[in-house]
Image 1 (cartoon, one colour):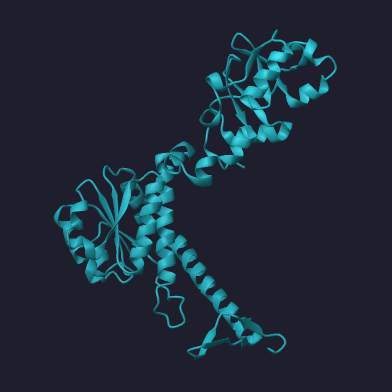
Image 2: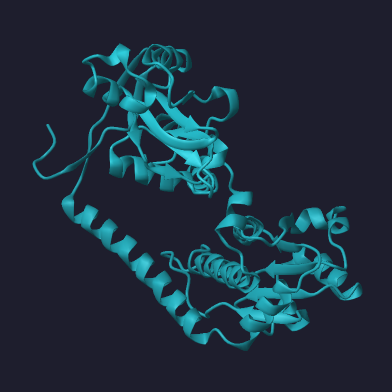
Amino acid sequence: MPKRGAVIDFGRIDTLSPKRHTMRLQTVPIQLADDAVQAGRDVLLTEARALEQMANQLGMAFGQAVARLTQLKGRLIVVGIGKSGHVGRKMAATFASTGTPAHFVHASEASHGDLGMITQDDCCILLSNSGESRELSDVISYTRRFNIPMIAITRVPDSTLGSRADIVLALPDVPEACAIGMAPTTSTTASMALGDALAVAVMKRKGFDPEHFHMFHPGGKLGAQFLRVADLMYSGDALPLVGEDTPMSEVLMRMTGTGYGVAIIVAGARLTGIITDGDLRRNMDGLMTRCARDVATHNPKTIAPDALVSEAVAVMNGKKVNALCVVDDGGDVKGMIRLHDCLRAGVV
């Protein structure tokens, strides 16, 4: 049995023979676990201090880069290699999803034909912590030859990359957070954060709003948050419409035929009431001798077609109802939306 107070690692399996496997329980002293937590805390604090330093030194060059990207006619091309390449991919994706057409070009691939992706209407962001990545040399030369704007993100402003760039965004000159001070950690965190800062600043300058955001994020929960009532509502022949004088026998047939559990009462096209299962239960006595107007709930809560589905869900939850009539400004029925369909679409 392991000693009391030890952390057990169940994941190690040792092979003792071709036919026999045993699982060896390793014990990790509490002191080692505490050391690991402290090591993690040190990394986070080191990187946090670097971000704070970078925020404090942000200046004119950042404003120039935002202005350049806001006025961009073509696309933003982000170029990097190694860990900077991974950061560059994320940076391009962030710009693309917030209204600035962008894509990533791998530095080595650029030298083998992908330079053709870069046009004179574009702007390039090149990432290199040292500013001396040899793989960037062809991209640097290409941008200089064809007068393509280039923004450098580097820790060394007077490096080969920094000295040839139009705008230099300097990373903080601080140590990497890894134990040997060599693995890209602080520098990649700073690069990614700087990319986010650029994208958000450009996004604000362009007036990029939730409507624009929805165009680029139609799927998943993000997309569901921007769905309009008109996107989910039932309309036309699918609506359980009945007149005010319709006998309840016909109303019940209509409710059963559509399967929605409601009937919408109209005078012409104008909404005058709604009948739900609850209305039926409250009017059981002599129900079949009545007409729709006698049983309906008049002046029911409604929603507009261009309202967000999330607003409709809030109304239904607040009123404890499962469906809403959708009407235009004149009170004419345009559709019906159900809570079940909102939830199925991912709106909560």
